[in-house]
Image (tube, rainbow, N blue to C red):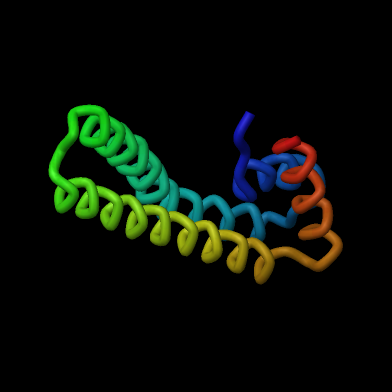
Length: 109
């Protein structure tokens, strides 16, 4: 099961977040998630294209082009994750963030 800090945020929202924190986190999620979802979909597509290019013996230039596109998409996705964590960290108290961090870690194990 894959989880995100914003998914773990839901648990906090039900427990200890203030109304202002819930509103800020909800707005951030509303704005950020469509791009994150699109990026993960693009990454899946590029991986599939690259696999086929390798299997089909596509020219090295085409495979390199797909690799570069995949690297770029992965970098954008990791940067988006970083922005998410930075926002959540700046919105929550250190204690709240520690709980969200632990819920996240529990969810990926």
